[in-house]
Image (cartoon, rainbow, N blue to C red; front, side, top):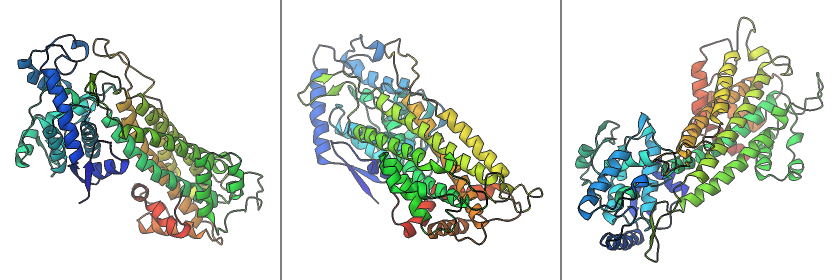
Length: 512
């Protein structure tokens, strides 16, 4: 099994994916253990002084004015975890919780939090044992970090609350720790606070969304190329020299992908045949511009994610010179913004894909294809309602594109009077990515059927490879009406698993 070693300088996106989705084991580097011990010495020294230090010997948030006596400090740390574990609603996905815990461990190992090495090791042990805390949908405002979600994770470390075992069954966390031979932690000064103060949930979801969207944008380029081909459009608009004079990198990459897919097609270039048209519709001609803008948004979001992965987000933090200072680095704005940007870009990509599907189904605009790609239009409805489903998904995508980060609801008696709502931005982006996958799958389904209905014209070799792979995946071709939902589910599974890219690249070479 793959092992990820956590040091003091952050982790990579690949590390997050390996732990969250691949079940990779985690080890702490010697450097991290040494940094943890050194920072803890500083916290212990401050705890022994009579002067109050926030997070070490005081209350939290609006209650920070109270100095806490030594005999109450362990109780204080337990209480902050218990009281902040106040989430509600459905459970969030296992991969999200694993990313959340792993990224908190990453910050703990930076040596800036003052947490003891044994606490960090327990975090790694819980992940390695396949124990997943129960974390709920609602509870984070994305400032002071993802407080409620992280609190539910910290509660598991204490042997309290509920968690999912490696068998997928939810049970009391104490039972699961005992079976795995893990001793629950007894939190000391600052440790409860350090386990809660991070942007880890929203960052984990950003990293996973970036991985999914990178694959989806390639799949969307392929689906757009097949739609252009099925509509007898022209590939001249994809020429590199046209995109070089508007040098957005994503646009050039999308155009290059489409051009590679269409190489050798007998269907393109017939736009001047029976029903001459000077130009293809925007949804066809501007496909690289829309998908390319989304790709450039992905690139910006990836930069933000990389910076955050290299960050140590906590409050207060232990600095190399021994100071423990309060700060505002837990504010989720940088991550929240790009999560919202991605939802906007995904909505627009879904919208233009649906317009191409609608064009394929309309006999007045499809240039010779049967109405709704039906076998016997009137008796058969063809893909009429598949487009309805796609339109419903697009409509929801537009609602999900409304930014969460533009909102703020003050909390903690106005101490935390401006929050990022980054967790909410991440949750809606996950739904948007799921919807976009289905939208691309429906366009692909329609485009492959439409190409097969173009008798006498040979599609591009790459297009043929996609059609063959889709059919092998259980998505049926043209014919009389049948129960359509299973075909759509099969198309969705094909796109979700990366089948589009896997089918094309042996013909085209690696897509951009």
